[in-house]
Amino acid sequence: MDSFKRRRNKKDFYAAIEGLIVSNKSMFFHVLYNAIMEHPAYVVLSDMPKDRKFEILEDMLEYYEKHEDYEKCAKLLKVKQSLT
Image (cartoon, rainbow, N blue to C red; front, side, top):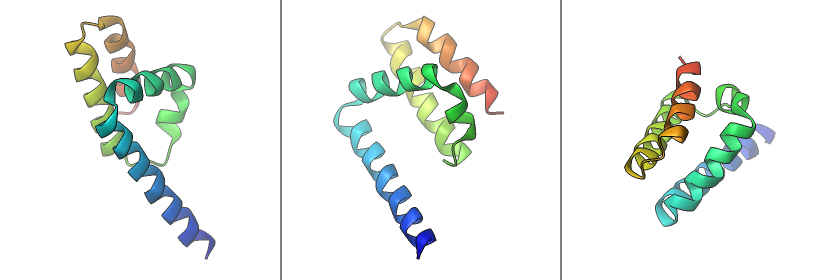
């Protein structure tokens, strides 16, 4: 029963993340960027599938590149490289 609850909670959490990405990408990326910079190990150690981590980081890189925020891009690239 506990593992079912945990899987359900993960699904709910991932659905909430997807909703934020769609509804307010700017705010989501701002908050996520700050969280990543504060605790980069969480990105590496989280149980989110690696391909999804890469996908989100790529979306963030694209977003910040479009906004010409290259300093954030450089920092995100370092985090992305730590996943390989």
